Length: 307
Image (cartoon, rainbow, N blue to C red; front, side, top):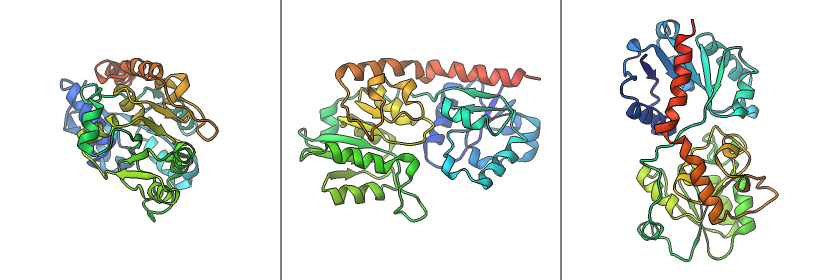
């Protein structure tokens, strides 16, 4: 069985998913869609770039990372249903997305969490990373490395990512030693809120992956404030690096994090203990791609062998 993943070439998370799958499964992957047995549409927004003859002749698995109900309009439904004509089975990363996808299709829907790459995401020295990035030892660093502003106007908050909830939470717990460390891009909404609240911040735009690792290492707390998510990857990355992380009950948070670290951040505040951090570190180990890839292989084999 040979598997081909469509290639978005967007320098974003799906490109990393594709790269890690190819690196960890060299014996079963192909860069030529014509040679594959299973066509994995890992970037579903680019499905139209795949020649129809391959969509019709191959077994097709399509990943739906997440659905934002407020943005899933009739045009989105029609696009889903058109693509559904060529899909044999779906992969989703969590039960929330499974529930929504099952309302749109009668095709099989397989649930399997994302993985993380333990060769990349592992604990590193906090003090040396702070020194390299230029953050004083006495600062309480709160991290957020995902975009939060709509690209249409670079002003409106991307509400599914919860930047308003993030800022509300930071404003509740901030003091003179607080520093918010921002990564990613389109961070205008959060930056404007932090400036108005007089909270210190440092923004590293579109840092390379090795620098993002160092940014995680500087954090005393990482906050996932999203309303809708597939993962996010930060749950795995922060946990694997032994960084305190809290999350709204969204995406994979309840599966990956210990109970203490998942709560409604609009009504509670909590700083994970050393025990919480260790529990998260131990829980996330089973999602290491070296182990977790076997679950994906079972899905592809099932779809491939289904006549």
